[in-house]
Length: 133
Image 1 (cartoon, rainbow, N blue to C red):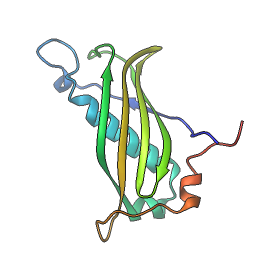
Image 2: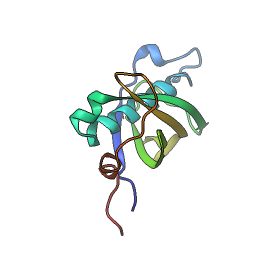
Image 3: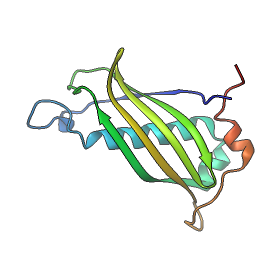
Image 4: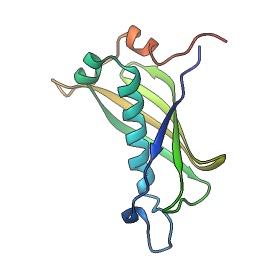
């Protein structure tokens, strides 16, 4: 099985631009967080969205090219695997066909009531996976 790619549009704001005239690298973390959460909200049932929160554990970002204020930027989010309460994502930030950044991240699923790590049910995880090729 393979994961379903989610495309998340990114709006670049004037406040994202740094002294060098391009998007400050720190903004990419916000973009990845927004894109991963949007991916979760799109494919998970509403009850699961209400019952679970996500906390980032680790991000590894490889910056390829700068982004600028007028750019049309998309984050392509792919759930690679779920292991226990942890989810592993790959996010590619693009401007058209150009790769601006590649991000590998891991996240912990948290129960919204207890604020403790929790496993996702298999049927919820299955919603994020496509059919066999």
